[in-house]
Amino acid sequence: MPPLQSFINYPQDGSYICSSKSIYAQIAGNFPSPCRKFHISSDLNSADKIAATLLSTLKKDKVFHKVVKNKFLLSDQLLGKQSGKFITLYLEVNQATSDNTIEKVSSILADLKKEHGIRPGPTVPSRRTKEHKEKEEVFDNLGFIYGGFVVDPTL
Image 1 (cartoon, one colour):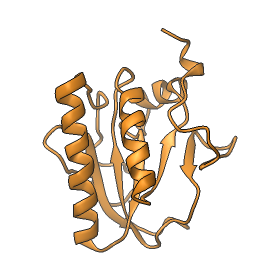
Image 2 (cartoon, one colour):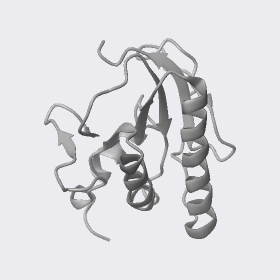
Image 3 (cartoon, one colour):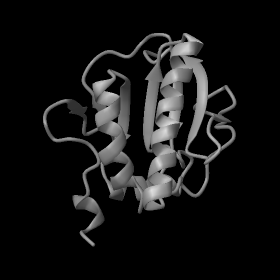
Image 4 (cartoon, rainbow, N blue to C red):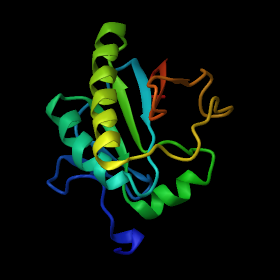
């Protein structure tokens, strides 16, 4: 197994913006504002398979998102207050649009679980007391997708 630091979750083709101040790489583009925010969880062993499959779909469908840059950072995050956040989706506030995207992502994750045994992170918080004021609902029966609350990403 390669060292955790060398693992890259996102394509290195210039379509993602990286800042040294953030653990995330975000797809180039603009956040919908306001938006409905969802998180996709992953354990360390599933992250590369989820990223390899899901990021290309999100990019093709023009879904604004960010992803933890590497396994080293994901490993740290799984132990802290942000546990469960691997990929964050920022969807239009329109519920039907959000539902369609979440259904597609959920279907992809279900297929990956069936074919490759992927797993969500060890814990998905039901409420983050400081960062979010809204309850983070679970949106799939496998425990990978949660959130769904409306935020202004510019704040």
